Image (cartoon, rainbow, N blue to C red; front, side, top):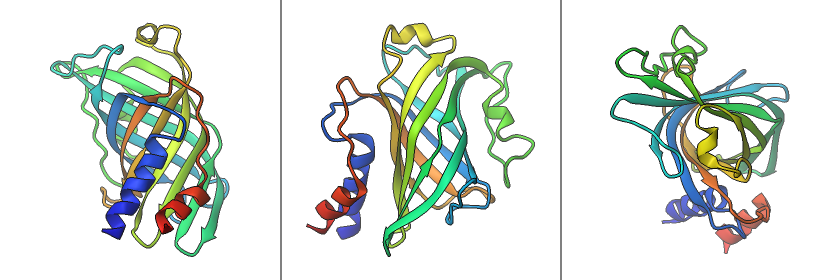
Length: 218
């Protein structure tokens, strides 16, 4: 029960920050790899992730019967990990890039993670479709609990281009990239990610890791 409570708490922290009512636009599942591995995350290590989109909601348009939708996250440079207490690790990454792609089943190539990335299919088969949306991330943080061997992640996303940028109307900022991760993945990948990209229609008040721990301990 304590593990379950922790998972719920960290998930709420990452995906529904304090002071915001969030609308889920994009759901994804994927795998990440970091130069040097994770943990430990050393300053200067680069984090990358490949994923398949499992859901898109209005105002975004998609055709999952005929197309695969994929995501690539890259260029995230670690600032090194900190350990606020013996059971928790927090890593902040410099701004990175995010791309979403649309690839026809009939003529395209299915995303294939393979093993020991980067490899012959990853990330190449995740980024060879049409440019659906692309943009940048900032304030990307990973929260890892060593006791439960799982954790959460969160970042801000700004969309800057792509064939479906117009679907978003004037709302190109104010998106949160967040969710949970665990170990268990193809060889050579560090983490398995289950996340969402959420719209924050109001300003977000940052939630500190200390507040999360305090709530959990209580």
